[in-house]
Amino acid sequence: MLLFLPQTIAMVVIAIAWGWIYAKDGIINEGLRLIGLGDFARSSTLVALILGVTGWAGSAVVLRAQARSLRTREYVAAARVAGESGLRITFVEILPNLVPLIAAQLIFGGMAAVLGEAGLSYLGLGPTNSITLGTI
Image (cartoon, rainbow, N blue to C red; front, side):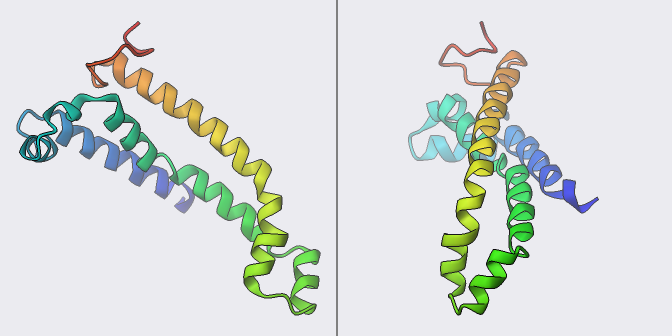
């Protein structure tokens, strides 16, 4: 049950942020107007920023689980017995084995961001100053 907690929290944060952004006199819009960035409120940069900030939770769970699994492997135990530091074990033994998983998470994260932005634009909640997949 705790596995889905980061994703659930991320979705709640997205919903709250969207409410703040698209409320006419919402907190974010008023703050952006005060500093002279009133047009930034419905820009594709802000949508990308919000999707990026809230979309990392699923990947973090997968990467953490794999790193914990790699930590118990024999070659990591051999490196510990050989007297290698924790930092060296992390960067020489564990991180290279995470590279394929990181690459896959980046690819799928990018696809999810494109689909998320297209869905928001289709619903009328995306950027209004550019053509996107959801408005085509």
